[in-house]
Amino acid sequence: MAVSRSPTDRMRAWGWRSAILLLAVVLAGGARAEPRHRIVSLNLCTDQLLLQLVPARDIVGLSPLARDCAYSVMCHEAEAVPVIRPTAEAVVAARPDLVVGGRYASVTALLAARQAGMPVELFDPVERLVDVPEQIVAVANAAGVPTRGRALAEAFRARLAAHPVPVGGAAPSAVIYAANGFVTRAGSLADDILVRAGFRNAANGLDGRHALGVPLESLLARPPDLLVVARSDVGTSMAQAVLDHPALREAFPAPHRLSLPDRMWLCGLPQTLDTLDRLIEARKALESSR
Image 1 (tube, helix red, strand yellow):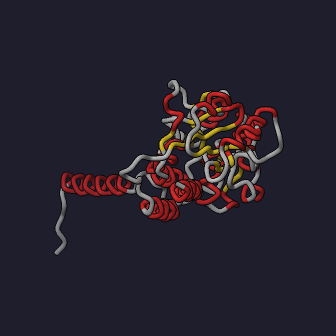
Image 2 (image 1 turned 60 degrees about the horizontal axis):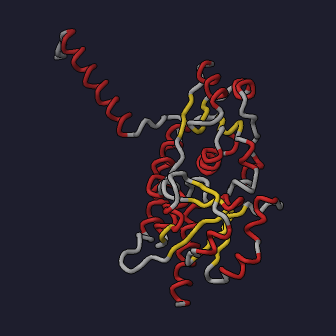
């Protein structure tokens, strides 16, 4: 015989079901159940993550930098995807079902998308390798592909775990030297990669800015064990001329010199671990030469 339930019992049962559903959403990290199919990215880092997370057909626009091989490790893959100008008019006209971007750029376009009722997700720059998997998962959840995001994040964690921070002994010093004599210091992803590779960033004795121009004479007066030359690898410019100065070549012969393009440091991506591998190899070469 069926048991009749009072309105109070039915409300209580409905409340339990709602609570269970809410808990499931929280545990999933806010992941969407269905993939997005019209995604716009206005940030170089989200451009490159999306290219590795979702089919190209689901991206209706990437930032112009996505195809620039001076800045993007996914520049060739980006050629299969439209590029969108980061303006309010262009973004709204694309009719995206998701807009992703950085927190501090393309502000007007992002505001227009929100006012038009479009979902917008913003992401901060990653400054530590251990935070890369979290951002991969967050972008994947926003795009509605949580399974793909978890797989990519776990692969990153496993590969990173194979390279623990070296302990014991004096770490060799290194400086990342870029166009206009800029150096990279603490509070940046590049600095964290140096430390993980077993180096001490010799630029951290400078003032509080993340990047600061250092005269060539100052660098030569206190030379690090390893000079990491960060160049765009595209074209020539006066800003990059300092990187080819004869005094640098003389002061930093192999194995005290390593060239890495700018694009290897800019975003937290699975490919960032390739940079870590190269720096670890450079440290081992230094140690072998002693």
